[in-house]
View 1 (cartoon, rainbow, N blue to C red):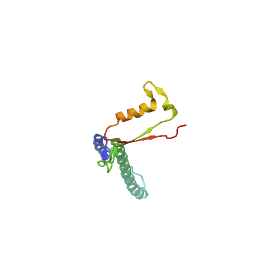
View 2 (tube, rainbow, N blue to C red):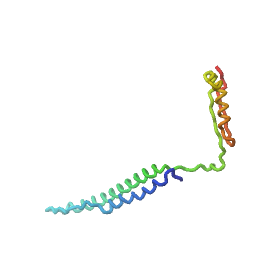
View 3 (cartoon, rainbow, N blue to C red):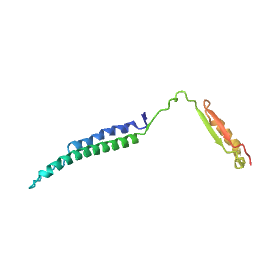
View 4 (cartoon, rainbow, N blue to C red):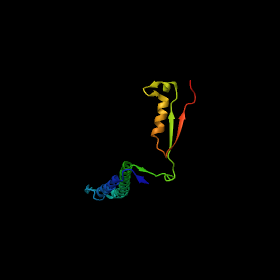
Length: 136
């Protein structure tokens, strides 16, 4: 895989920021004492485990989202397998309707267009000229 803009991949270092925020979370929980906390202890153990899983899933989804955005801006592409053996081929579709038979300053438009194509096409390029064979 190749990238059109590989310099944008340096922004992947920015993925450290959500990890640091997650690890050094600034919110601290305060302990509140109640008169009867016997029933709340079991509940708090369960909620801590589920909240810990939710926090890790949230961190993973944020990292994945940022990673995908950064890679998308780098514009990845796959190089074709036959790029070395590929021949240069050019397909030209030319309109040969009655409107192209109109005369311009340098003669008929159709003949002039074909002449310009022959003059401007490089030598090593194979080209096919496709026209409409029906003249109305």
